[in-house]
Length: 304
Length: 315
Image 1 (cartoon, rainbow over the protein chains, first blue to last red):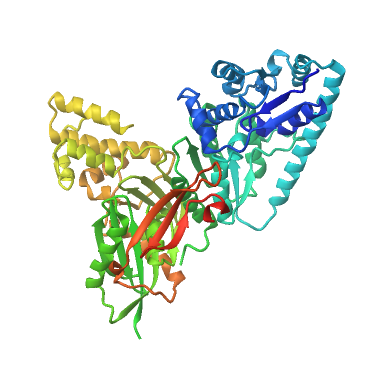
Image 2 (image 1 turned 90 degrees about the vertical axis):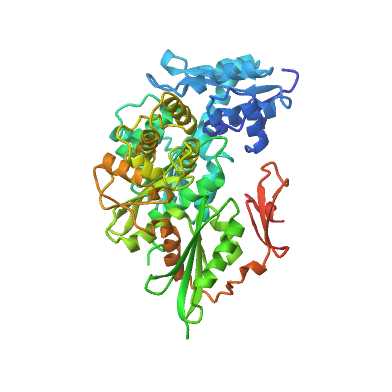
């Protein structure tokens, strides 16, 4: 390609799953990338303005990030991921994302389409995307393999760091939430900042072992339709005996979470609290709920 | 040598409560007034009322605890030694008053909660999240619509023989349901008791969903003063509901007890009216978060500020 292009990456939704993969891949191909900043109120406002009111908070935030990038880059990366395993699906938002963005903004979108259930693997999808960008198959395949290795390494490091935290002599809470919620500046960070203020160690259920072949989730539910929720179930089973309590965090309205979290509350015997976030959630309300939850799990200084 | 006394204040959305206790958790004096959306003045009034009742020749206040939705503001204003959420405070107060309690139902002006106690330790709780239907505010507004004084509401409801069914999921829907029922000629008492039942159903299906309600059950909060709601709870749970005269003071009582651990050489004065307190809210503007910073002034001098999510906000 003659002209150097920049690809914009919204810091939202799948970014928190695939940032290493994406950034390494484009870097290997010599393409510049621009990642939007941490979510702020301006991004949220613009997201709200450009979405239907029924969309979930996380999707609104995503659209806000696309809006931020739209005049700053040549392309915006918006993958369409339908399924990652046979007979398993992601939330429909991830299938619809490409079309939602295309119908909301006049932007150039670069996309890749993964649908393992229909025989389209991530690797095939990446090759197709690379070809659209004008690269040869061999070069793309090489870049993809390097990125996959890097992704694995990063995930393993994150996982091992988290395992280390489990043995610390502190009150620990498992945050059960999708990565795009638990890491978002206006969603999960409000929770994790508060927990840390009370000297509570936060264990993230979205940090998973990339080598995990154990199907721990089966203790809670034999088979779950949604891959990401199944991963969270696996984490609950892996971490529950190390932590003092579970915080279920979900953005409204989330279909998968509303079913799966409810099931976990019934089946997992652990002190827990559910926090729903929508665009109107006040920090004070969340603080009151978290503080009382911590009083319950810490059990120390409140009694005579 | 004066005896030690401990002050607990619970500043809720509707009412402000204070309790002063002695070393043995006996209540020396208490006060209850409406907040009227002005917590600073409510607390000033409260303190001056306490001043007239309190025996400061024999007792000295050595700690102050604040709880309730304005706990932080009032805590800073009075120099509280402990500031805690109302759930914990209510539980601690109730455990002291009813040592065998297993379930606390609490319905206040804007929120409702359930607290489960296991052997004098809080084991679980839940609080309404996104909706205030089925709280005191809902009942007050519907009473107004029915032209019933909220204090008489319970008595009127008890006269009902055929309570109506009211959709309770949302204040707005409940209201249109209620108007519809009124327009086709239902009796006031049947509507009133229907509302009580709808509050109870809403509470049990939302706040208390999935929680095991074991006896003894203590019912608290402003709505516990409504005998219609008490009856509706007893009918629904088929259990006796304990409501005591000082249920409304339980948050203040609990925080007073908790404050005992945080005794301090206080400069507390009952002459709080001499000070002028002011809150000014500003937008930080130092980064894109644009946090709302709350600044508290005492006699025009900045004494505290909060609301910042990063250090920049304090500069």
